[in-house]
Image (cartoon, rainbow, N blue to C red; front, side, top):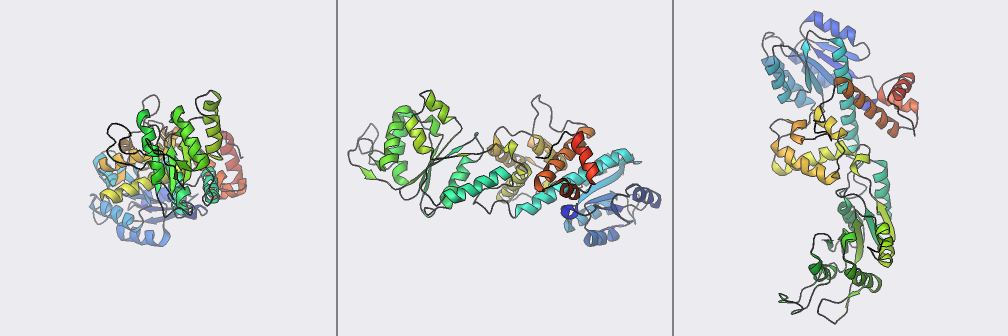
Length: 453
């Protein structure tokens, strides 16, 4: 919807005056613009900026062919790539409809028009358009609060504010959260907003290094300290001097090494393996884990004194499935990133792909999404990335999009209402944002069991 506040504008491109009049009469709740040829459609797109275009493929001067209709689709999308084009086609013209989709049309429906079905398609398409418009508007604001952090979620924005406060300090922070939520991204944000930003950010994953090697990796070693130690080598801690040391998966650090790490944190000196000389180190330490360190310390699996030393400040990062508005936002960011990196000409997502992205739980969080988008963008052969390339599956193995039109409408409406309520202060403002009356919004909230927090 234009600016999310005005009555949606729908452009009808149909040279059959009878069908054109029928559609104009049926959609009296929208602002309708009707034209009967390509040049008039292009002019209307520039003047009225409609959210949706209902377009016949057979347009003059070739009403029995599709060339003019296909050209119309291309010209409309060149002017406004965000416009949703719904193609009207006969039941025997499936191949032409699919060609129109490959050019960037949003969806198609058959003539003669079933108005009930068309109503559902229009409502679903408007919800998708509204969601995309919202994401585009916040895109310029989403991550400037912290370098590398992409979010519109209120909880994540609070975390961004907290990190900005903590960054200039020397407080030892521990980032808590599931694997893939972006703990290293936030650790880098702490570094990049600190006085140490011009020095090294040194990361080490405590779970990925064998137990017999992690001590030498952290503290370094002298020549001859052990078999294979051919020369003096600085460890990660020493290399991070003046900068930031990031200890990822700190919960997997062996108990015998935890005491040595505690001594370093307390005294800020280290000794290389096989050495006797104390080396002073000035570094900021940030830790991260997906484990419950407090419970581990109670069970004797993690030193309690080390726990309190590294957790001067704990920051709990919510999983992607709990972040309001971040799924589509991140998906678009990653798609753009890999299209630019691989010189791909993908313009965006299909509506089915966006719905699949919103519905999926993302158990692997942001890391899983990035990996899926990287692969899917390379495998995509169309101008718009579809759900098939994303290969999203429900727990029972069925496609996320194997849902009825009724279910689609329910999910789209419920999602739009939830977002509107989260973006506004009261029911009246939310109703205005959605383009419905207050009583209608109350009825929908009751229908979908949505409460206002």
